[in-house]
Image (cartoon, rainbow, N blue to C red):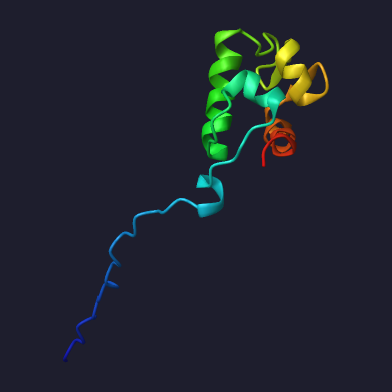
Length: 100
């Protein structure tokens, strides 16, 4: 009795592609005067603006103690957000109104 050999050909693994950032996120944007008071007036990519906002939020202890997802706005951030408290998820949407 002849036994058939099972062919176990593993699919050839494609070489890993280096992830390239989306050009739209890396385009330098000019912040409005209200946002420039927090992140600076120099044109920055959207990702850097969000990073600088988080540095400001943490340095000034503006994250809500009970619910870390909420950010309590101080005078500068209130001008940007338009309300005294926002969630970290709506923050990026509110920033869109303050960049060109």
